[in-house]
Length: 361
Length: 41
Image 1: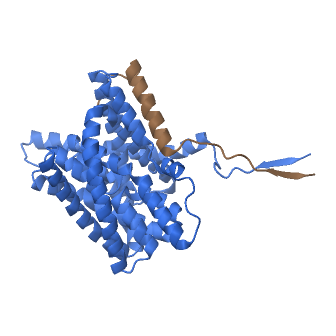
Image 2 (image 1 turned 135 degrees about the horizontal axis):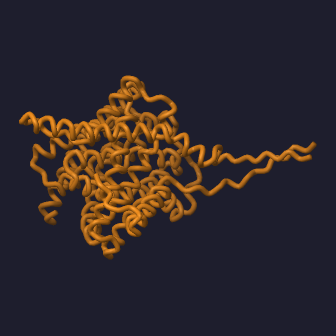
Image 3 (image 1 turned 180 degrees about the horizontal axis):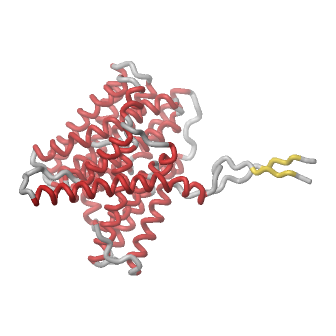
């Protein structure tokens, strides 16, 4: 009798069990997100009933704050972690659904402006972060990861680059911690600066989409300003995400040559592998909306479904930030990241304002 | 008794992006077909 043992390294547990493991965390995301929504409504009703003049705090901020409070006080139990990690799935689902709110012509016009800004921002931020990394004596691979994280799309870009350049786990953790901490900071700095400068929804949205690193934080920073700004931030950030393959390929080739390893074989396949496919979903839904496949009520339904998906994302943003864990990573990568971010935020602000003068946004 | 170890072909599973696009398209189809109506906020 033969005993056959199947070795399946890719999927140790089946899909139903993985789904079940996610349920507690998804439940927590829902409770935190709804908590934020209820708090916004209750405070608005209370202040209105008592004729108080208090600035309205959006559900986005409440959801993030409740998440932050849980994560940094009682902590998040292991049972919730697989579900909380789905925040990125909700983010991408929300972005694809939001495509219904864009006509393809708008996507092409704003996308072209965003792409031009993104290209300039990429060159400047990669150059500046590399210089800062050298000045502060960070390891070259950590510097590469920080440069990619701050110039493209935060954590996803760091993870994609880590594999391509064969960086250490420790360097990747440093870079991810720095980018997450700075993303959290952007949530509390971008919206007040936008209001202070009297920016329009479109200009602010473009700035948040090109200036904030991580996609979830970029969308949240947009939503904290206004719904319209969030919409534009999603478009600008999506254009930026589309560049990930090219930058990761560039770094992979550079590090392969430097380490004396074999360079990337099929570059087209590499680019396709790294390309964020949800961008195609976003364009497809936008194309369908442009062809009037959906009526007005259906577009509203899709936009609201997108908001529900973002609600879970914002709850996840707060729940995964743990300041104690970040502190353990040390201060230097954080300082490099912070200095870089301030410069990137200033440069992207200048670029967006300049673009507005050239092509009325 | 022979102890045979077979190297199972790694299953092609949908990526995170693939799942997000699939679920979003499914929701769009449900809205289009009228199974999901007047989704509120």
